Image 1 (cartoon, rainbow over the protein chains, first blue to last red):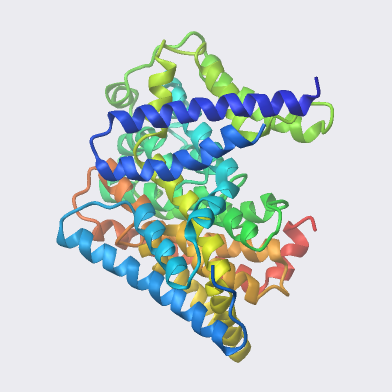
Image 2 (cartoon, rainbow over the protein chains, first blue to last red):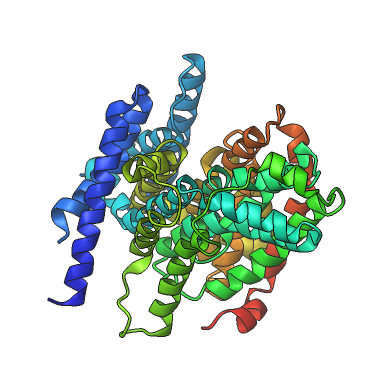
Length: 53
Length: 444
């Protein structure tokens, strides 16, 4: 398997891990502004996860 | 969607977009204060830029989320750098490093000050965020400096100024990356010029604020302030750092032979190594702690800056600012440099260092495109970073004050004036003689 495929795969896993962390922070937070702000972080990372392979 | 306007009409469109953006921003700030709400800057800027797109007849949804995708990589670097630093802290490795510095070099003030500077530089270097340094190695630096007899207000000033300068040091300098991507220039060849700017400034700040009050601490005082940390062996706390530096060096020294896993993954490897070098800790909890709070706000702000670049380019607002900067530059270049030195840090007090890099940094760079771009962007980025000390946002300054346990901001800010002025004047000299600096410090 080409090296770049492995590295891109690792980055997809890393993005999924970061998204998981952000989601858990959002769900635990009681600050509504922080929850709204996290949408700005979640959308680009979700686009990276879903559209770039 | 409306067609782009041409002729004189385009100035009106661009001006109107800027006006709507500024007005929406101001209204949101006033409303937040009126109703006692702490709206994050990222949301305020996001709404303002969306409103300017709608007011000029564009559908903002696509652009508000397309712009941020350019900044995914740099945000991964920040997240992973913070995870690495937090795991180092959780494993007790940072405590060991602090103890070693004090126990071995306490009689050599110059060495201690340089090592504390390195401690405060490192997190900013790898994440590009000054607050990352204050939140991670900052506590260690406070303990060391306090044991060495440096007054609290000066400790706060050291934290604020040195982490500000350190965040401009290579390899990651966020305003430089933002300005470079805003003018379609690769972020390459910045290392030596950024070292040339940050090292003298950092050393000056450290010695100006720390040298006079330094007192050699006794071993008992050190043991009392910093209980001897547990460690597996002498070298273990340094292993994660050695691994990260070795991988980074190998990637550059053996291109094509050593797999280039890129900076974020290097930090993740380092953070996993940390699991085996100190006390046991919960890796996922440490990661969550690393990316929560201030770091999440910074990352959100960087994504919003992507949206600002995209929308201001779309509406012509960025072009209008470039034109204004070029007119000032053509009228009197000295006025242009004065405008840079004053407006970049001061406007950054409202927009933060990243916001000012987008709104003013890119236009200033485009107006002076005939100079060596790498050297010029490096100088501009230094000026942008000093926004971290300017209220009302003063991200780095407030964190530093709180960590040092100071109540008021102004006494600390007064102590920051001389090292800040030294750095700003040095950066302006570098901007004026950018081509001469580039001949020595820029590879192309």
